[in-house]
Length: 133
Image (cartoon, rainbow, N blue to C red; front, side, top):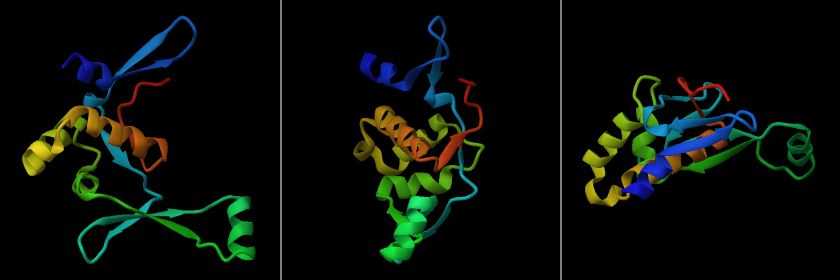
C-alpha cells in the first residue's frame, strides 16, 4: 500500500529549493482538441496522431510516409478514453475501471496513473487542474 501511495504522487522541481507534490488521483484529465479518434469494427479506440514538422514533411514526400499514425488502445485504454471528459477526476475514472474490469484492473492505482502519465507525455491529454510547474 505504501508503494502505491508513493506512485500516486509525482514530485516535480520548480526550482532547486521548492518541490511540488502532484497527486494524480485528484487531477482532471482533458483530451486534446487537436487529436482525432474513432473506434474500429471491434470497438477499440484508435487515436489518429498527425505527423507534423519539417522532418515528417520530408519523410511523407520522399518516402511516402503516412500523414497520420494510428495508436491502437487496449481494452482498458478503450474503456478509459471516452471517460476523459474534463469533469471526472482520475479517482472517478479508476472507480469505473474497477467496476468494469474487477480484479483484472489490479494493481489499479499504479496502473491507471502510469496510463495517464504516458498519454500526457505524448500530449494526448492535459490536466485541467494541474499545478503550475
